[in-house]
Image 1 (spheres, rainbow, N blue to C red):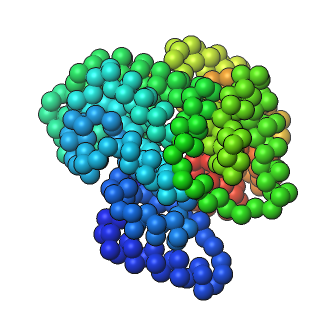
Image 2 (tube, rainbow, N blue to C red):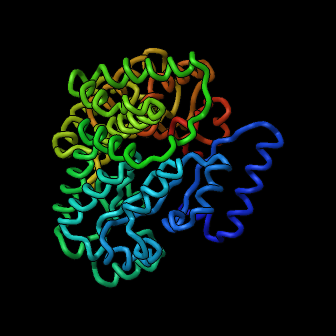
Length: 405
């Protein structure tokens, strides 16, 4: 994480020249993306070389618009320039910008969320990934907060994209931080803000970022999927904001608008499924659904071929765990698919499916079950013994795969 391709600028420039020459010699264009530091915007030559080498996007660790918080994290390169201007300079070179942001530093207050919102909106960053400050074990931050008594025991300490953290903030209440964090994402995912960010970006892009060449048929498919799967389900409000974001006077930027709406709606879908203000209500829904599943699968539990449990985590939601321990039947897999889909559709709970044993007659039933759950793959963990890995054939690019030995 947080690799910086331009940590050694001269080496980076040599690499860019080589990549550009290689593609020209072989008459084949690649499209690259990378992580870099904000001082990329200060080097015009490097920006030109990035563009020539085929870099279409860069991820920047912007972290915070507050100088005090940047100094706290030793992000001094972000304090030596106006960050909004820096993002726009990168846009002007024809390179897309994704940004990483963090809230919860010692210098952060409730007002920080408003400044984050203003910066992300004005910068036009559609892929804005905002996380809560999380103290990873065995780090200086963890040891310092542990000494200060500011670590929440049992809370999330590994993933800063959850709606909870193990850090107790210094200048605001923990509950207030979580509430404002959800509110920030809710505002960013509004149709109006998605459109505003696109408009703010297009103003400053000198040339449109290079988007992979596609046939007219492929382009038509992408646009039609956006319309029928992305825009029409949102009704007139979503269609209205899409139309007002299209730069009809600069038609060559329309592919960028299409791309940004796909990014924006994808993130909106994720946030709606994972971030919700009424955690208690969601937990109640997960409990009720679990009670129905327990009644439905009682005989399997009594036989010892199935184990079930419901885990509730602080400031997160629920995880429903199912362990397959022996011979089941076709009816089980069919009904499991139905109940699991309902859990994932109607709550923000996650599901862990632990496969301890699986009869060879049920391999195809398991594959069908996984196919039904694939659209919720980011919330489904599959724990499988190593010897069953090839048989079960879990796609780790879709599900969270956990191998057990």
